[in-house]
Image 1: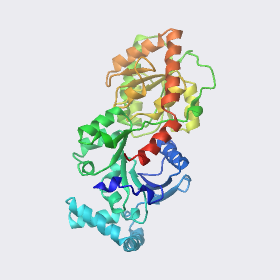
Image 2: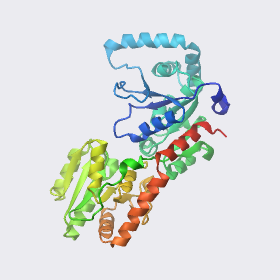
Image 3: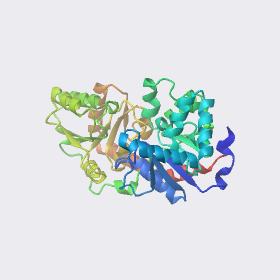
Image 4: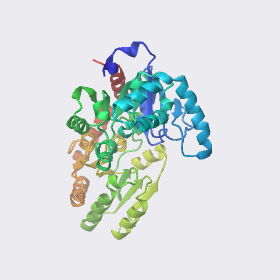
Length: 403
């Protein structure tokens, strides 16, 4: 098991294989920033994806997994797989043997070799799975191709997926892996699962601070404008946010509007909640917009709300703080490290909409000196602690410091 740290980095070029479900979408700035930073530091990045390759993704080479879903394409795929396996027979046999050693049947071991054959031709220093779930049924691929293995946990994959798939990471956690997490809480969770502290590295998300500088003076005028950016998914806690605004409206005669940017499967449910809570005149579903449009909405807003039930860290909260918005978040996972309670914003316990409403009232009622101090603290901390230069340096150390 010492293949991870045997000094082989000097024998191969600094190639990193990054494994993701699909090419990064416009909103997935973490991975695009990561790729750009690695390239800037002299690494070559190859992106392995499960979906179809995107011609519009120009940052790096994209390699797609075999597609077994289309019958007409299946024959072509199998011919490609056979050719790949014959050209990389030693690696294929190694992967098969490692799977058998882990207790997989011969048939399952063959299947693992087939679905992972697209990794075999590449000589990589690191094979990095961008989500914990991406490493499932691939726990031995890195060793088979003589690469070191890294896994990122980002939130859902560590806290929610295992509740539906008990012991899904048991095999992964038995391997020698370098783990990347977004928060201290995630680090503690991995330690509780038996992972040594020395193999866990916290690297938080970061933003291009210069892109999120407010260009107009901040004015807490009427109506109060609230904002949330994110998928319309139950884990974002948007129903609790709407309930809080219902209580806020009941207790105050303050005009406000709440803009929600994003799309998702919960849209119909949330629209019905808006109707039942009597917030139809207050809530606007903006939908999916470009990054530049998000910035414009932030510049027009006063308070950013991220009352999630589960959240790895959340780039949008960093962006909102950089723009000088008053950020009120839940205590879910990494959010209480993203925002420092009563210093750079406010952290409210999950599932407490009445308490959230009270905090909103408190924030609006602050005097100008208190408001300016919070905004100044938030902007300064994001600039110093969550910048791309710092993140790039941390990832460089992640891949090169093997002490």
